[in-house]
Length: 144
Image (tube, rainbow, N blue to C red; front, side, top):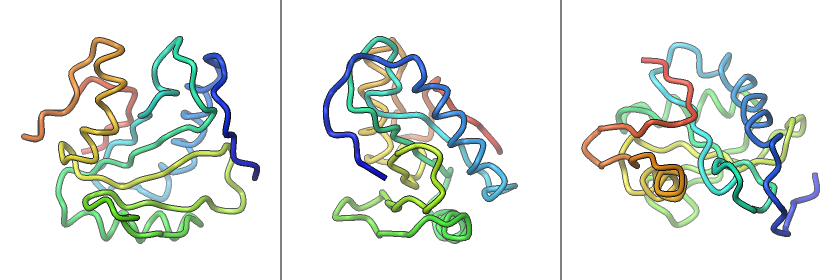
């Protein structure tokens, strides 16, 4: 898959692409407590961005990170570790990925989660996670 590298005008298909990605993740994550959030610049309506959908699988506690990793590996993703950012587990795409995207597992409210949602939150008038477990309003799938 060719990695999109140039900033383009906002594409109204980006939220739809996120929904397709989320739909492919959901059967693998099953009953694991989680949210699937569309984060980064493509999550901000009207904002020009690289055409890369950033997706966080957000779990409520650190002990749920290993089972989330196992389930995403079963879905065909390749776990790449934290890539030097503690608290954020990164994944390479499976061969059958529907759209180019970045996928991460984070703990709700931790620094990587806050970093991923701050742009979307401040640009869209939402409050990013506080770090005390209080989630932001977001484009997400919440399963608790």
